[in-house]
Length: 207
Image 1 (spheres, one colour):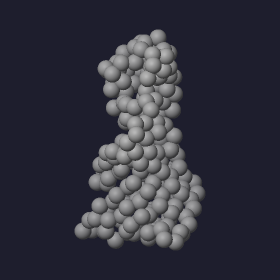
Image 2 (cartoon, rainbow, N blue to C red; image 1 turned 90 degrees about the horizontal axis):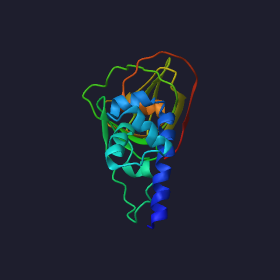
Image 3 (cartoon, rainbow, N blue to C red; image 1 turned 120 degrees about the vertical axis):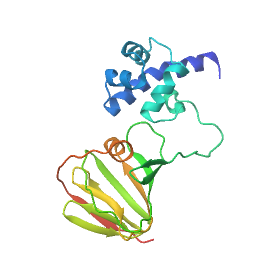
Image 4 (tube, rainbow, N blue to C red; image 1 turned 45 degrees about the vertical axis):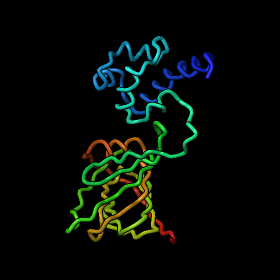
């Protein structure tokens, strides 16, 4: 990589960081409190007045939960393998399948087997979700509806409607699921509890 290309990569870091922060709905003050980096330094970093360093980028990558390469726009290496890092929340495992900062995030979600199925605890948040059952029998509680989805079935719904995902029979359930940013925060990072309404739809697919 020549010097001009290095400069181009570094010049693009600031705008990328600003876009990512705004996409996540995070203020500079919140980011400073989380990372320990001052507001003025973060502002100068985003505006290009401060060059990115590893010391500054590491806490930002941890806060945004993205690979360091994505912050600097580093080119992919020749190795096509993706090293997935499972995330465990609320007794379930989420395996991130997408690396793109912001936008829609794809996960493989694994609901473990239990001697006795859990009682539903519906939750709401802003956004939209899409899921596809790979294995097992998924119980989807959606507003007043209580649905059982076998392998090969999919569902999509507005998450302002109270919803809950679990095993229909106590067995392991594996599914692919697409979350918007609000869904990632709710299912993978936090545990919100807010009410609401809306519609849903479901369709079957053959395996």
